[in-house]
Image (cartoon, rainbow, N blue to C red; front, side, top):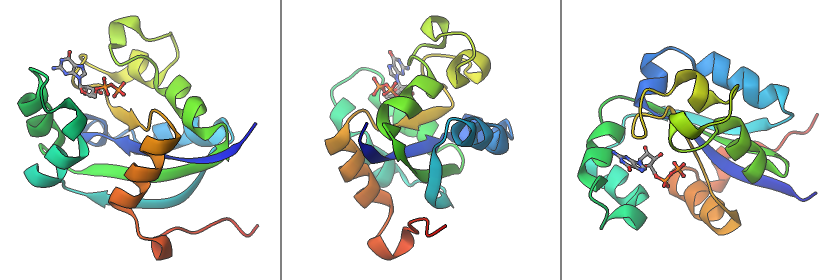
Length: 143
Ligand code: GDP
């Protein structure tokens, strides 16, 4: 298993529900380590750029409005198989299809307001890490 880094975002509905700690607990219980974190309120420009891959989708403007509706908590997770592991803990995009016990099954209210984001592959993870963090904001564990 490769040691990887990935981006996790607690979206505005997750921050509103006050479950940052509960989400961190689940990620840490799975062996993932937070090596950087920041809270920010995305601008429309930032959210639009972050989700540019969905530019042509009918839900794009709703997605940008949702992602700018409140602050988000962004973290870099590090660990064995971190990208897939985070996606498994999150559950499927549509909470109705998410496995029981996943974050989205437990907390998401719709296919849009689904509480968390996770990078979907190594290249996306690399791009998303650079989108939110500079190298000197990342703290590799030394113990
Ligand atoms: P993810 O990787 O599981 O987050 O899913 P996607 O990359 O496919 O979609 C990005 C985000 O867009 C999702 O997490 C949802 O917040 C939103 N989204 C995806 N599909 C839909 C949809 O069919 N309708 C709406 N309103 N939002 C969607």
